[in-house]
Image 1 (cartoon, helix red, strand yellow):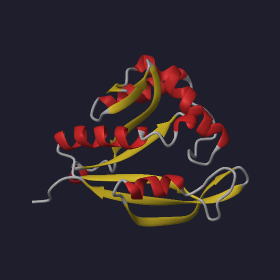
Image 2: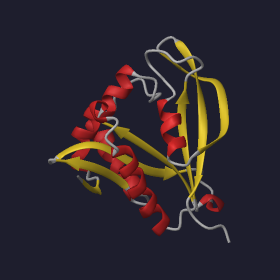
Image 3: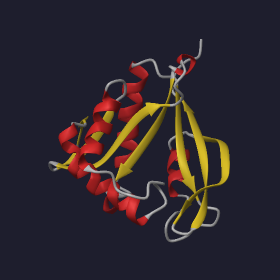
Image 4: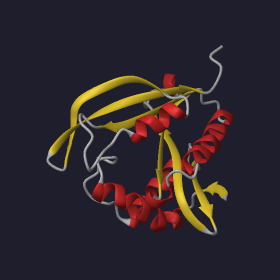
Length: 172
């Protein structure tokens, strides 16, 4: 297993992973899979300030995690939003934990103190969305700090969104 920084050239493989979630789940609230060029730009833009990591096993990317702006004002400079996506067939192998820990370490080194995760949350679990992501984040030390009700519409149904928070640095 190897963790490294994502390169824009990884976009094709990352879209293979992400595309499944866009097309088949309410984990992502995008309706259309972004183009390779759009995804390459997302990687480039993110890496200007934040890490975007991939996890490889036997030379194949099995997942990725990245950080982004939490809010655009200067006072929020010690906070960021984090996201993670894994190849759908590799869940339960600990890849998510390993990726998030590596991301946390890089963010800590940048002076980030607060992590926020914006997570799709079902009103009632269905074929498109369970509470697995919320439970995964809880397992890694995130706490639920807010919920927005029926704010996202996908697959002809409404979904909630929750915010989870994890403190990773000192607030002196």
